[in-house]
Structures are given as C-alpha cells and as structure tokens.
Image (cartoon, rainbow, N blue to C red; front, side):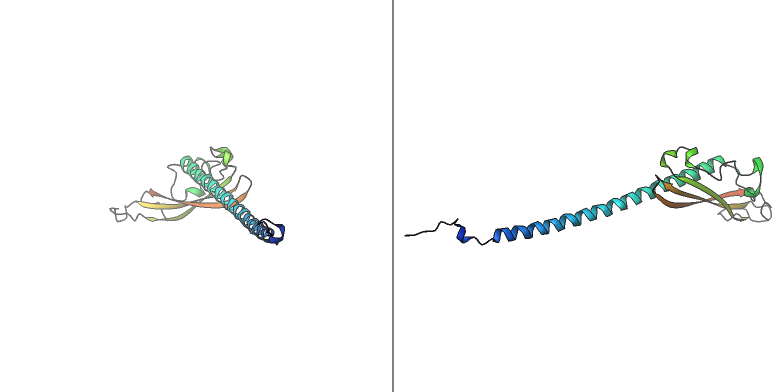
Length: 168
C-alpha cells in the first residue's frame, strides 16, 4: 500500500503562482487607475478654489467701488474730474488695499454708463417733469489668485434716478 500524501510536490504544477501573479497585475492596474483619478480630482478642486477666490475678490472690489461712490451715480458722472467724478483710486481697485488682500488677487474695476432716459418703473410720473434714470455697468475683473492664475469677471448693474432734463 503505497499512498501519496495530498500535499505531495508531484500534485502541484504552479497554478497558485500563476493565479497570484495575475491577481497582482490586476491590483496594480487598479491602483494606478485610482492614482490618476485622484490627481485629476485634485486639479479640478484647485481650479474650483481659484475661481471661488477670484469671484470673492471681484465682488469685494465692486462692493468697495459702490461704497466709495455711493450717491454719485448721475448722468455723465464718469467723465467728470475732481471731487464730482469717481473717487480717486476707486476705478483701479486692488485687493491689497482692502480686506481681501489675503486672497492674492488683483482686481480691476471698470465702470461704464450704458443708458440714460425716462425712468421705466411702475407708478413713475410721465411727462416733461418726470424723473429720469441712468444705468451703469460696474465690471470687476479678478485675476491671479494665489499665483495659480485664472480670471473671473463679475458685472453689477446700478440704476440711479436723475432730475428731469438730466439726460441728453
């Protein structure tokens, strides 16, 4: 009676080695795929953070411009010089001068008068003595947050009432 034990070397042909190498290759490919995915997600997150910082800086610049020039929005106001025109330094606002200097963005504010004419609101007076309205577009362009780059443009509309006959 010659019995061979189950664990005899003759019964194994290297199948475990082949299966383990295949499993190792599959796991390696899976890990490489996950690393590439995480790198892409980090880049997306960084770009999103830069856009959010630029948006905050542009909003802060516009808010600063509006507060510095509160009550001055009138027909042809932007072309005036001196105390009647825009506040000195308010057209070229940089975040370093305000509360948002930590963001590292530079913000340029451009104000444009886009319209002047009869006020079109419910209940407005009609006729030659009616108030008029002037509209401005305040554009804030923020760029370069944290040295990464990117650019965000924010537009804010402003309308102010003007006395009759102010608009040409």
